[in-house]
Image: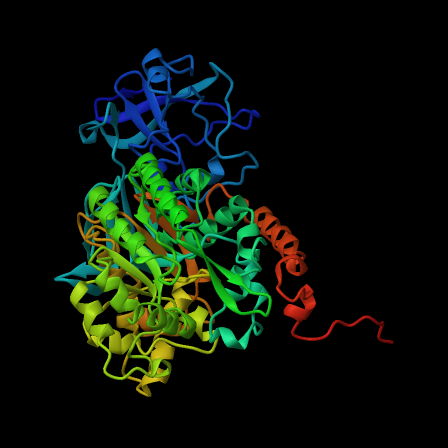
Length: 621
């Protein structure tokens, strides 16, 4: 397959025929705009097909000239030769101007060697080619037009009605009323909302079979917390949360997060090498590292919560985390980064926290941990150290602008703490640390942050996370707003703008990334397009108020990460979502059946978690 440049400066090459004889395949240079493997010119030898790693990733494959095999230079770079064949049904997303035609084939197939048609014209000027690593590639310029765009200007978001957004390769290059320049691909966003990719600062990549088990159930003496019900077990017994198949849980969670518009996530410690590979495959931007701690939660013979300490295990866990970061930092075109995760404030020793801070500074990575999760933890820290959880983290040096504190609900500002005169919010603001606020998971347990408005007024950076389930940051914005209004008895606080900023700019600030969560020239092309025409949303004047008050992740139609479309038509590209959900259901049922094996009283699954209504075991005539 020979790529040439004609007199008009346009690329031409011969396209292979459909492997089943159905005519020419839709071979194009629009891969980064249309949600599939990107194609770029590799010097004068052939075409580079970029897979899940995106442009500049490590998995580019060179398709050589007429023979459709890898060149020697390509093989030296680890590129696998492959016929460049394309499924026409997936050449552009459903929202693009060019309507796709149906095709039953997988995204990529192997064509018939040597079968070609006359050369086809591929839009894109030769002079736009640029050098990227050791390959020559073609930046593709995509225009999203006609929708309401949440642009970034003068330090904040702005509403641009019926605007245009242009991105080239992995960067936004234009945001404005209209764009008259040349483009390779156009997406009609009329009736839709174009927003920056959402930043989820706190999530757990599992099926959450454990958390789903205790809805409306659990021990009252754990004081509004859910996880202690399934993360604690008698000594020598594996608790429910540790029994999960990590592969299934990771895949299920990452797909759900991406499907709901989260382009950047911070996962709290339940990952391995396969997680990195799958995250890279689907295209999500993720901060991933295994968690570690000095102690595990245990339940004594009488059901009392205890801590089983192993300081050496905590230090070994830190070393494993450092090695993991060393192996994966910057993988998949820079979308994968590491962060140190000492798991909970009450399961980590001060020495482990100090070692974590030292390692984070040496590696140049951030830190995240769970703190202020419940009253049990709050009073355990007062009893053990004579300090609140926040005060302990401050003393050990863990706090700082690079630190994300999961939940941080139970501080001296909370009415249940009953500790007047506390300085927790002042300490948090002074340190520059970020609170990852996950309102829904605590609302299910009858508790709430006190409050989103109060923390922000004190100068604390507050971002949003989904924690367990559902992983829908669009809905989480609504929970953050409504719960704060209820707590403060004030309908003017936690506005739609406030919580949208928390889901975008505050998250980027926590990650020290001024190229994320904003739509402005130079920012990363992480973009979400939402369909605003549903009956649920109804008529609206302000799209952000409509999104916060009426929207859900189901409104997400298209997700673009690093300029690559990873969700098209509301489906994650390259993932069989039905099959994945079936896997998760089977895994959850397997886990639920183990309740008598780890529960300290030996309860059955039905005893621990009765169904909302009693089962019907008779026919009704």
